[in-house]
Amino acid sequence: MKKTASADIVIFGGGIAGLWLLNRLRQSGLSVILLESGYLGGGQTHKAQGIIHGGMKYVLQGTFTRDAYAMQEMPHIWKQCLQGKGEIDLSHVPILSAQHYLWSQHKFTSKLAGLFANLALTNKVESLSKENYPTVFQHPAFKGEVFSLDEMVIDVTLLIRELVKVNQDVIFKIEPLCGEELTCDDQGHLVSATVYMAGKSIEITAQHFVFTAGVGNEIIIHKLKSQEVAMQRRPLHMVLVKTPFDYPLYAHCLGFGPRPRMTITTHRTQDGSTIWYVGGQLAEDGVTRDTQAQIKAAREELKALFPWLDFSEAVFATLMIDRAEPWQKNGIKPETSFIKTIHNITIAWPTKLALAPKLAQDILEDIQAMHLQPKIFDTRELRSWPIPPLARPIWEDAFCKNVA
Ligand SMILES: Cc1cc2nc3c(=O)[nH]c(=O)nc-3n(C[C@H](O)[C@H](O)[C@H](O)COP(=O)(O)OP(=O)(O)OC[C@H]3O[C@@H](n4cnc5c(N)ncnc54)[C@H](O)[C@@H]3O)c2cc1C
Image (cartoon, rainbow, N blue to C red; front, side, top):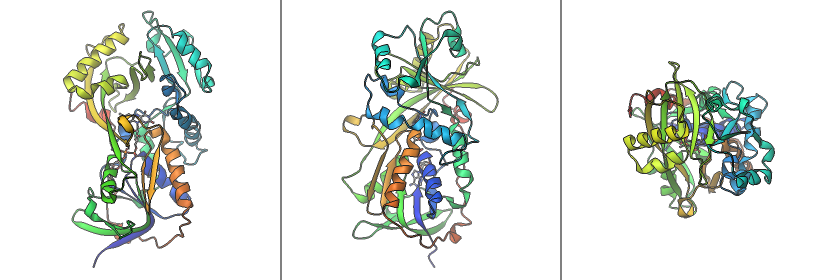
């Protein structure tokens, strides 16, 4: 006999978007199952730098865009959660840095100073005196300027662990899905999903299905053949540096273009090494370079930006990752999070880790407007199914491969 399970809502994908949503939906009294085909947090989420953007980065583009408006509420929402007073209790998630910094190699231009002065975000930017600079910039050779931004950096690995902790009874590992396993009726409603694990299969039914599967959302998009939603991938070639020194740094470097020349966050491996995780323009431009060329470019950039530091003993690694986002004309960066509901299917991308609370709120409101009545919740057949493993921090893995 066919084995079955059912819930009000089924979520595909256990990255930040799916896990935040799972917590919110369960609070609302609906029954939910989350299905993950890889590692929890193992897609884009555990490769994120953990910056809770409040929109300041976009000010660098010279205008106060919709990005900045959408994001300016985010640090407050996260702060509440991290203090145990918000919509989800994240009081056990470590804050790696209470603020992010913005530095330039030279004194800030009057154009930028004027821009800051005119912005609604001005009170979120603070010009620092030298004694308050991050230690690495307190060197006499540093001739630039440093600002502090009201944007935290958090430990993403432990964030995922906290979001999973109270939901282990409804999170299940599945084998990668294909479109044929999703059964739609003639009107395009998703009736059921047949999922597989270790030779077993279960047909899962729900009133509503949510896809927060990152690049995996492509499966449902192809299945629906809908013109209303499409996905784009924007690649990055990130760099990890195991530094021979211990300077914790969380900062964007202001370049000449609209994007930070470099964005650095600092992480520690279990054996106590200090890792600089480097993105920004270096990672954007690096997508056309192979590993060795990207490491060479990173060494040159770091030498140019920190001439007083010796990177000769540093160990470098790189990783390529696609950001999965709603399709935009000319492949540009989307301005905010995205949801599209077609019949009983919602397809969603947060586009930023920081926007996960907004995305979850938007989906929750969408679902509440459907006035679903709680129906039978039955996970008995799933009880013997494994819970997906948590993703390991990338710096723990990185130095086993792509090492130079
Ligand atoms: C290098 C990098 C740095 C970043 N830094 C930041 C930052 O500092 N701050 C910030 O706000 N944002 C940052 N971002 C953006 C942020 O990481 C992403 O927007 C966010 O993590 C996307 O989360 P998600 O849950 O939608 O997707 P993902 O994290 O990709 O999760 C999708 C999950 O779905 C699973 N899955 C796929 N297919 C299926 C399927 N068929 N069935 C079940 N499960 C499936 C995958 O295994 C995965 O676990 C960064 C992104 C990158 C790439």
